[in-house]
Image (cartoon, rainbow, N blue to C red; front, top):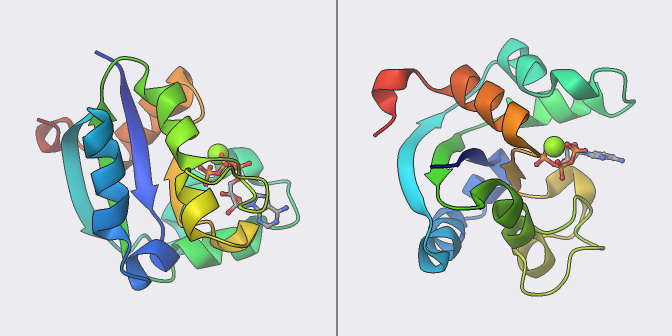
Length: 137
Ligand code: ATP
Ligand code: MG
């Protein structure tokens, strides 16, 4: 069954949105197969966002991801990669529809509270980066 990597970023954790976000994935019917709380190092954040290394916001983005606790999760279900992104909403919360996580709960692109893998390859890579196989149910 399809799996995706979802992370609640430090702003989402700090704002007390863990339960709210998990609840949306649960209510949809997706299954939580791994979860942990971690403070990623800057080096780890750079690995996670490696594909964006040429972007002007890369350094600030990695500083931010490593600035506090992150909830790292793996969710499973039919179509979870694409539909998970739908639940999350557009990258820029100003362009996210109401009803989506970013649309309902975030305001600016640099503090958009949640990450979701953008395709099957990245899902596979990100799950392997954040979790060992023994941490997955
Ligand atoms: P994520 O990978 O976090 O799920 P995404 O796939 O919607 O988000 P990406 O293009 O992968 O968007 O960008 C990764 C993250 O970089 C975004 O979630 C956002 O926090 C940040 N980001 C993207 N574009 C900008 C920008 N123009 N200015 C500042 N930060 C940005
Ligand atoms: Mg992305």
